[in-house]
Structures are given as structure tokens and as C-alpha cells.
Amino acid sequence: MSPKRLTPNDALFLVTESRETMMHVGSMLPFTLPADAPPDFLRQLVADLRNHPVQAPFNLRLRTPDFLKNPLQTWVEDDSPDLDYHVRRSALPAPGDERELGVLVSRLHGYPVDFTRPPWETHLIEGLADRNGRKRFAIYTKVHHSLIDGFTASKLLANCLSTDPHERERPLFFAVPAPAKRKNDILPAEDAEMPVPPRIPPSTASSWLSILRDQALAAGEVSRSVSDLLRGNLKSIPDLVGPLQAPMSILNRRITRNRRFATQQYPLDFIRAIAKAGGGTLNDAVLALCAGSLRRFLLALKVLPPEPLIVMLPVNVRPKDDPGGGNAVGSILASLATHIADPKARFDAIVASTRAAKEQLQGMSRHAIIQLSALLMLPSGLQHITRTSGRMRPQFNVIVSNVPGPDQSLYFRGARLEAVYPVSIPIHGQALNITCQSYAGTLNFGLTGCRDTLPSLQRLAVYMGEAVMELATALKVEAPPTSPIY
Image (tube, helix red, strand yellow):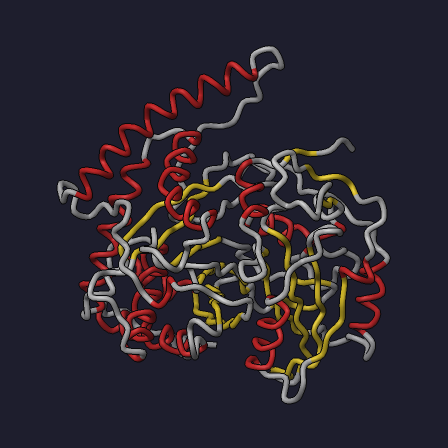
């Protein structure tokens, strides 16, 4: 395999890598063992995984691992990855509850990947407390964001799991070939995704001319959108969030390498019913839950800004037949309306803000969306490069991502996957990241933050549980027969 050059988006995750801002993402996957699992199920599983050949991109390492900021950086193939290093086995102390699992994942997420190897790790975690008389375990995986994005990770995860509980041979994600193109693949950022035309590979002779033409056309689209943003700042478009509207907050201070991870899970139909009752999308309901919990969290700390917090929402811009790999993500800015106490009025303000942002992107080409997103994120990027992040006014206060996942129950070697909890990236100036993913009728939130900058971060998950019931009551949505909080 010839060396593979990193895209500018991929390289950005290497440029911003530091001791405190580690740019790897992860997932925490709890499983219920099959009823016929032998006592040494996990030992056999670890041994088997370590004997599987590794497929791309998980057999790629950096050519210059000691020079991450190399502008000519490339991926090269590692002929013999050390799977004893990459695949590890851990155990929880008693009682092995969700809190103990969160503490372990927080600690594992708080140290960097080894760039002299393919930048990923998988930890099989045993000792998780039984549920309904069945044994359980968890898998925590982390991979550097320069290697894959959430779209690719979601597809690889779905491809290595099975809908058949009797399937016992399928290898884990790093040993599964890249999934074949499928016409109707689900894309990340469900409600925020923008329609883009199918990508037609140009001929060799005209490829560079085609690229230059597309970028030139995109530049014109971007200039018109920037004009709209500037008018938005002048209140001509009051619901459109522009640059430098985010207030200073505790969420936007410097961070340390220490992490805190918390989770929440809700029935997906319940959240969709809330969205429908409020006249918004699923993403709007997700943002409303985040807004309600953040408002309560910051009020408890007595540090709630009088201005609304601003959220950055990633936008998928891939064609529907894109096989994944690398990073192809745009972004929009929206208000979380945290200055509004009434939950229904707050939801209405969020809907208006996201609608204005999406209308701005509607009809733009994929290249234009990426260019505009890069321009919007430029002040934040410059702060990171100049090491002023967390000391100056932020571009936005928090990142919230929504990644659609499989809608059926999935199994790995007969063990049922209970949930998919994303584990994401805090950085200087962005001490909290919230990512959610749907799975088998549930919506799973992973809250990843700096434990030193944001004290008692686990309370944010508790406040989210209160926020969902508060919003459901305000919108007259009936709660499920059992508690939506698992």
C-alpha cells in the first residue's frame, strides 16, 4: 500500500494534539452475555481478537509520529500491529455499577494514544454488575480523530455486530473490511444533514480543473452566506447566530488532561414525541435537553451567563454512497436559549435558531458548506494555534453532536449490545462535549468533560433527566410507563 496523505481536516486533529487536548474519540458499549456463555467467555474472546488480522484503517500508523505537525504527514501501513497492546482486558472493582464503569472509562480516556503505533485501543471490561440475573461486560474503544470520523466509526461498528443472536464468529471492528457501499446508508447528524448531490469521480485529466471549479463556485456561495451572517449580527436576521455571539462561561476555560464521563439513555420515541409536540426536529429536542440541564448545572454553580449559550452542531455533508474514512463534516451555530427559564419558550427559541441556520445552508454545495464551516471555525482554530483558547471570548460554548445508529438490537458473539455511549473530546476553551447516538429504540448520551474545570460533572446527567420530564410536562407529552432514565 502506498502512503496516504492526510486531508487538511485530518491533519488539524494532529496539529491540535497536546497533553491536555488529546484528540481521540471513543465509545463505551455495555453488553449482556448470552445465556449459554461459558465461564471463560471473555478470556476466549480476548484471545480470539488478538489472533485476527487487522484491516484498514486500523493497520495504519503515522510516518512521522514524533513530528505530528508535519505538513507532509502520511499514513503508512503497519505490517504487524501488536494486538497484545491494542486489545486489553480490564476489571471493575465491586460493586461494578455504572458509576464504577464511568470512573474507569474516564481514566482510560484521560491518556493519549501511542502515535508510534496505529492510534487506537480496545479494552474489554469485566466485573460489570449483573442485570436481570445475566452477566454483563463492556467494551471501551478509542481511536484518534485523524484516523476516522464519527460517520466511519458508526458504519464500522454496525458492520461488526449482528442482528442474529446465534452468530458467534464475527470479528470486532478492527478486523472487519470496510463495508460495501449501500444505497440507503444512514448518515450521522440526522436532522442537521444537508442534501448534497452524488459525488461523480472525475476523469484523471480533468480532476484538478474540476476541483478548482468546484472550490471557486463554493467561494461565491460562501461570500453570500457571510453577508447573511453579518446582517444577522446586526439583528436583520435575529434568529441567525453569527460569529462572536457566545458569552464567556465556565465551559470555556482552560482544561487539564483529567476527564469525567457520564451517560444518560432515553426511549427514542419519547424524545421524538417531544420534538413533534414542540414543532421541532429530533436535534431540536436534543438541544433542548442539553440546554435545560446546562442551565440548571450553571445555576447551581452560580455562574450562568445572562446571554444565551451558543452551541456548535456538526453537519454531515457526505453523499449517501460515501464509504467513509477521513473527515467530511460541516457545522452550524445556534442558540441554546439558556437565558429563558420557561422550558417551552426555550424550546421555541432553539427551533427558530436552528431553522435559520439550516435555511442559510439549504441549496449550498458540499464544498461551500465545508468552506463556510471552516470560516466560521477559523477564530476558534486561531485561538488553539496561538494557545489563547480558554483565555479569550469563545466562538461557541459547547459542541453537541447527534449520530444516528442502528435501529435493531445488535449482538457480538451472542452478547446483546445494551447501548452505544459516545466518548468525545474536551479541549482548551471547550471543557464539555455532548454526543448522543440512537440505538434500537433508545437515545444514548455521552457527556465528556474536564473534571477539574467542571466540578461534579456527573450532576449534569442527573439534571438532563429532570430537564426531559420538565419539557415533556410543558409540551403535554405523556411519559413512558417506566422511567425514561436507565
